[in-house]
Image (cartoon, rainbow, N blue to C red; front, side):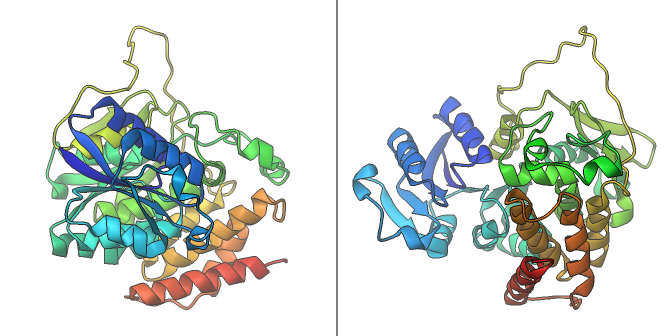
Length: 382
């Protein structure tokens, strides 16, 4: 029985994780559930799964909570301290890191230092502090398994050979809702249009990131750290049907791909069950149905965010913290109709260019860069 701490239980990845646990109660038990502010939803989950701990990440709610909402056997914790407590508890074997944004870094970092298996959906942890997190996991005997469908696909394809035999890693991208839009049309994109993703149903922040292709930029940086890959080894291919989730090309010319209908429960289940495979959720492929698979190069002029991702993957240091923080604030401003769609990558690029590069920043230095970049982005054209 694997004891799981699920950080971000009320978000889209969290809900999919609950589906996986619900389907296999003999294998998985929820030790802790953590959410940011959705207290009633968290309480409802606690009544179904009966975790030992429930964590409300926003400490300002500590004095307002009606504790009678929660089961008596579930203990309430608050803030970053609560997140870190459940992420490092000796009884926990797997930490699902699914808190959106840089807020998920502390839980990932704590779990990595404690030798846990981290099922990583919070790509920002590696974007912001890739060297620190991966080195912490190595030193503690922990492991980081990807939950992103693209990185899960790469992880599976890499099992077919030795790491030094890999020539290139190809991450696929749907291209988002504006794949065919002109630059002039992108300048006029509305919030409602950007939130309408053609393939995946996700939260608002990651949906906007997919529309700008910043999500793929962050995934390039994540892949650099997860797979110890150089920028020259990484490539992005636009594949609108999202059937092939990524490909690994070997030095002999062989290319391995992982295919499945889009369903986030599949990579989640794989990360929780690895090295085993279990009967899953994915709709079975019907190879006799008429279907098309298309592949295109990304347009870095229309989607400059992707170019920033490759630049940060090459630069390292604190650049990932700056890009991620600037993007989080820029997306928030766009959702509040305070920035135009194409101003999201513009402000990110300008803040990134303005920061002072540091080679091996500490966690406190990265958090300081995060705070600086957020303030710079808030003031931009304000």
